[in-house]
Length: 113
Image 1 (tube, rainbow, N blue to C red):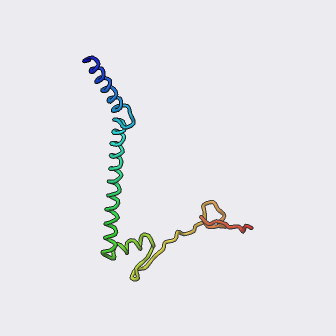
Image 2 (image 1 turned 90 degrees about the vertical axis):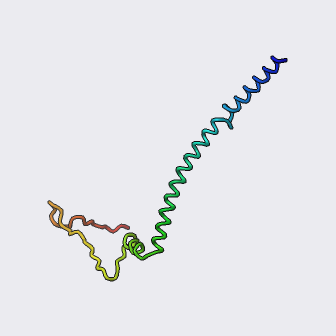
Image 3 (image 1 turned 135 degrees about the horizontal axis):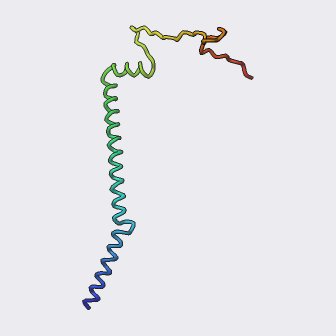
């Protein structure tokens, strides 16, 4: 009877260990989930930093005209009323060795039908 009970316990232990180490819900799944948690936490950290930066930008845009003027200048090319806008255009010079028929950088256009 003692040998039968010991054999039953040994068999039960082997079956439980198999389920723990080799089944789909065992240690391998726990390790995979832990690495997924670490990766998700890193992604969440990046998104939280980006959200904080956007919140600061929104607060800056709501609080004063400086940020609005800066955006208008950089993104829209706007100029204030008291400023003068100067556009510098490069001089068109003939290419060296050319007979002078066309300025450098000029392209000829042909009509296509």
